[in-house]
Length: 362
View (tube, rainbow, N blue to C red):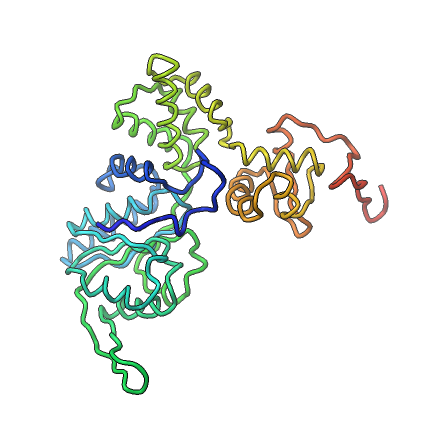
């Protein structure tokens, strides 16, 4: 198994975010121990799991390699885990690499030429491959063949290299960036959805059992409710709550203990952390709820524009607390309610400007 450095495609830094979706060294080590080994043990993603089960069972019945699989969705939802389950279900070895690690067609040719028959190649962040490697992958996926260019200039020749049948599992957080010729070569495409709180509660219970942590149903529900729909975050919060319970309590995680622990780590009841609340607070208190430009908002919270846009905003928009408009970012009524603030009628807008009148005054 090849584990490439994930830092090249992690989310922009925003301090050590407990609710961040990028996996650090500790996360990867724990996830390796907690990963389910087969589809029956995998929690959530019911539709993708059912469809994938049919694809794999049909391939085994034919005695053939499985179709190429494309998995899309946000980080931390289980794309890598599913790729390992595909290999386990097919009884095949797996090789793991990432799109940013393949900068030249020769890098991809070296990997493909060393595959064995039936092997699973997991290519994370596949949309970030270089264009020459991407074009080489077209032929490899469709015809199990690559052309290796020998020499340069007019004397260069293409030597065809036959490949054994293999299964490519591609994972991407941005399916829209995949070119249609590459996307069309996948026999199965599955989109990973965010988890419901009940599903995350099952994930927390399973992880607690494997980590030998004593947890009550209410404690698991409290952790699940603050996990932003992501198993990776749920497992990370569980470990931090476990530490708190061992130091401050008798080691048993109840609802009260979980809430106290996550309050210490500044993760509130809806899963917002310090950065999320700072963005909302600035938007509400300094700019009257908006609209306000992204750069101005970033300066107000002391963060880079990219950090606010790519780290904080996606979750705030998904939770219905913030909206992006052509005029700038605006807060929704749910944001005022969540922070316990009230906007006075006729209150000043951004930077103290008076409220705009409607078309007919008023």
